[in-house]
Amino acid sequence: MAACLLRAVMLLAASASALNLPMAGRPASAVAVANRAAACSPAMSATASAETEAPPSFVQTEMRGAAMKLHTRDQSPREGQQPAQTPVKAWEPQREDYLQFLVDSRHVFAAFEAIVARTERLAPFRDSGLERAASLSEDVAWFEAEYGLPPPDVAPPGRDYAAEVERMCAEGEWERF
Image (tube, rainbow, N blue to C red; front, side):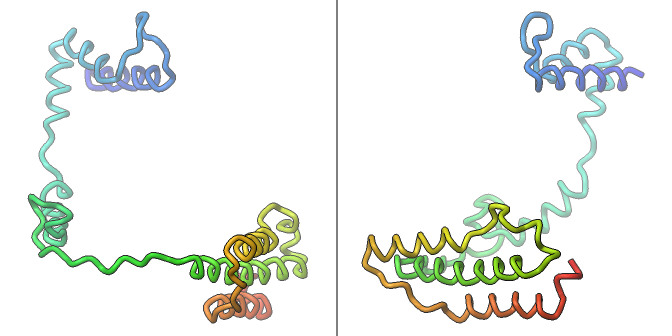
Protein backbone atom coordinates (compact mmCIF):
# COMPACT_ATOMS: atom_id res chain seq x y z
CA MET A 1 0.00 0.00 0.00
CA ALA A 2 2.81 2.37 0.86
CA ALA A 3 4.47 1.65 -2.49
CA CYS A 4 1.23 2.46 -4.32
CA LEU A 5 0.88 5.70 -2.38
CA LEU A 6 4.47 6.64 -3.14
CA ARG A 7 3.96 5.97 -6.86
CA ALA A 8 0.77 8.03 -6.83
CA VAL A 9 2.55 10.94 -5.14
CA MET A 10 5.43 10.71 -7.64
CA LEU A 11 3.01 10.61 -10.58
CA LEU A 12 1.08 13.58 -9.23
CA ALA A 13 4.27 15.54 -8.67
CA ALA A 14 5.62 14.67 -12.10
CA SER A 15 2.35 15.74 -13.72
CA ALA A 16 2.30 18.99 -11.80
CA SER A 17 5.94 19.62 -12.62
CA ALA A 18 5.42 18.88 -16.33
CA LEU A 19 2.49 21.28 -16.43
CA ASN A 20 4.45 23.87 -14.41
CA LEU A 21 1.76 23.88 -11.76
CA PRO A 22 2.93 25.21 -8.41
CA MET A 23 2.64 22.81 -5.51
CA ALA A 24 2.35 24.56 -2.15
CA GLY A 25 3.20 27.90 -3.72
CA ARG A 26 6.30 26.82 -5.66
CA PRO A 27 7.20 24.34 -8.37
CA ALA A 28 8.35 20.98 -7.09
CA SER A 29 10.03 18.10 -8.83
CA ALA A 30 8.79 14.53 -8.54
CA VAL A 31 11.97 13.57 -6.69
CA ALA A 32 11.53 16.36 -4.14
CA VAL A 33 7.91 15.37 -3.48
CA ALA A 34 8.83 11.68 -3.19
CA ASN A 35 11.65 12.50 -0.78
CA ARG A 36 9.30 14.56 1.39
CA ALA A 37 6.70 11.78 1.31
CA ALA A 38 9.30 9.16 2.19
CA ALA A 39 10.58 11.28 5.06
CA CYS A 40 7.08 11.51 6.53
CA SER A 41 6.59 7.76 6.72
CA PRO A 42 9.18 5.19 7.77
CA ALA A 43 7.27 2.49 5.86
CA MET A 44 7.41 4.57 2.71
CA SER A 45 11.13 5.25 3.03
CA ALA A 46 11.85 1.53 3.51
CA THR A 47 9.74 0.70 0.46
CA ALA A 48 11.36 3.45 -1.60
CA SER A 49 14.88 2.34 -0.75
CA ALA A 50 14.03 -1.31 -1.50
CA GLU A 51 12.66 -0.29 -4.89
CA THR A 52 15.71 1.79 -5.82
CA GLU A 53 18.23 -0.90 -4.82
CA ALA A 54 17.14 -3.53 -7.34
CA PRO A 55 19.73 -6.11 -8.43
CA PRO A 56 21.54 -5.31 -11.68
CA SER A 57 19.72 -6.45 -14.78
CA PHE A 58 20.93 -8.50 -17.73
CA VAL A 59 21.30 -5.25 -19.71
CA GLN A 60 23.58 -3.75 -17.05
CA THR A 61 25.79 -6.83 -16.74
CA GLU A 62 26.11 -9.35 -19.55
CA MET A 63 24.78 -7.24 -22.39
CA ARG A 64 26.92 -4.26 -21.39
CA GLY A 65 30.02 -6.45 -21.32
CA ALA A 66 29.28 -7.81 -24.78
CA ALA A 67 28.67 -4.31 -26.14
CA MET A 68 31.91 -2.97 -24.66
CA LYS A 69 33.85 -5.73 -26.44
CA LEU A 70 32.64 -4.22 -29.72
CA HIS A 71 33.48 -0.59 -28.83
CA THR A 72 36.83 0.88 -29.80
CA ARG A 73 39.04 2.78 -27.41
CA ASP A 74 38.05 5.96 -29.26
CA GLN A 75 34.36 5.33 -28.55
CA SER A 76 34.80 4.27 -24.93
CA PRO A 77 38.27 5.05 -23.58
CA ARG A 78 37.84 3.22 -20.26
CA GLU A 79 36.04 0.08 -21.41
CA GLY A 80 36.50 -0.21 -25.17
CA GLN A 81 38.32 -3.37 -26.15
CA GLN A 82 38.74 -3.02 -29.92
CA PRO A 83 41.76 -1.17 -31.30
CA ALA A 84 41.20 2.37 -32.53
CA GLN A 85 40.29 2.56 -36.18
CA THR A 86 41.83 4.94 -38.66
CA PRO A 87 39.15 7.25 -39.99
CA VAL A 88 38.11 7.04 -43.61
CA LYS A 89 39.19 10.02 -45.65
CA ALA A 90 36.51 12.65 -45.25
CA TRP A 91 34.56 13.38 -48.42
CA GLU A 92 33.93 17.03 -48.99
CA PRO A 93 31.33 17.58 -51.71
CA GLN A 94 32.04 20.29 -54.24
CA ARG A 95 29.53 22.56 -55.95
CA GLU A 96 29.48 20.24 -58.95
CA ASP A 97 28.55 17.31 -56.69
CA TYR A 98 25.69 19.23 -55.11
CA LEU A 99 24.47 20.37 -58.52
CA GLN A 100 24.50 16.73 -59.69
CA PHE A 101 22.43 15.80 -56.63
CA LEU A 102 19.91 18.53 -57.48
CA VAL A 103 19.65 17.40 -61.13
CA ASP A 104 19.20 13.74 -60.14
CA SER A 105 16.63 14.65 -57.49
CA ARG A 106 14.71 16.80 -59.96
CA HIS A 107 14.55 13.88 -62.40
CA VAL A 108 13.28 11.47 -59.72
CA PHE A 109 10.69 13.92 -58.38
CA ALA A 110 9.51 14.64 -61.92
CA ALA A 111 8.92 10.90 -62.34
CA PHE A 112 6.93 10.75 -59.10
CA GLU A 113 4.90 13.80 -60.06
CA ALA A 114 4.13 12.36 -63.52
CA ILE A 115 2.92 9.13 -61.92
CA VAL A 116 0.74 11.01 -59.45
CA ALA A 117 -0.70 13.13 -62.30
CA ARG A 118 -1.77 10.12 -64.36
CA THR A 119 -2.78 7.68 -61.61
CA GLU A 120 -6.29 8.29 -60.32
CA ARG A 121 -5.68 6.37 -57.11
CA LEU A 122 -2.93 8.85 -56.24
CA ALA A 123 -5.16 11.89 -56.89
CA PRO A 124 -5.14 12.96 -53.22
CA PHE A 125 -1.42 13.68 -53.62
CA ARG A 126 -1.93 16.14 -56.46
CA ASP A 127 -1.27 19.76 -55.52
CA SER A 128 -0.52 18.64 -51.98
CA GLY A 129 2.66 20.61 -51.45
CA LEU A 130 4.81 17.51 -51.91
CA GLU A 131 5.81 18.59 -55.41
CA ARG A 132 9.53 19.32 -55.61
CA ALA A 133 10.53 19.27 -59.30
CA ALA A 134 9.74 22.96 -59.91
CA SER A 135 11.65 24.07 -56.81
CA LEU A 136 14.60 21.90 -57.78
CA SER A 137 14.57 23.46 -61.26
CA GLU A 138 14.82 26.88 -59.63
CA ASP A 139 17.74 25.67 -57.52
CA VAL A 140 19.53 24.30 -60.59
CA ALA A 141 18.95 27.61 -62.43
CA TRP A 142 20.31 29.53 -59.43
CA PHE A 143 23.47 27.40 -59.44
CA GLU A 144 23.93 28.13 -63.12
CA ALA A 145 23.41 31.89 -62.67
CA GLU A 146 25.43 32.19 -59.44
CA TYR A 147 28.42 29.98 -60.23
CA GLY A 148 28.27 29.65 -64.01
CA LEU A 149 27.91 25.88 -63.72
CA PRO A 150 25.86 24.35 -66.52
CA PRO A 151 23.50 21.63 -65.29
CA PRO A 152 24.93 18.17 -65.91
CA ASP A 153 23.03 15.29 -67.47
CA VAL A 154 21.10 13.05 -65.12
CA ALA A 155 23.56 10.51 -63.70
CA PRO A 156 22.88 6.76 -63.84
CA PRO A 157 21.71 6.49 -60.20
CA GLY A 158 19.03 9.16 -60.75
CA ARG A 159 18.03 7.73 -64.12
CA ASP A 160 17.89 4.17 -62.74
CA TYR A 161 15.85 5.16 -59.70
CA ALA A 162 13.30 7.07 -61.78
CA ALA A 163 13.07 4.11 -64.20
CA GLU A 164 12.49 1.72 -61.28
CA VAL A 165 9.70 3.93 -59.92
CA GLU A 166 8.08 4.01 -63.38
CA ARG A 167 8.44 0.21 -63.71
CA MET A 168 6.83 -0.36 -60.30
CA CYS A 169 3.90 1.82 -61.30
CA ALA A 170 3.50 0.13 -64.68
CA GLU A 171 3.48 -3.33 -63.11
CA GLY A 172 1.02 -2.33 -60.41
CA GLU A 173 3.42 -2.75 -57.51
CA TRP A 174 1.94 0.40 -55.97
CA GLU A 175 -1.17 -1.59 -55.19
CA ARG A 176 0.64 -3.64 -52.54
CA PHE A 177 1.29 -0.59 -50.41
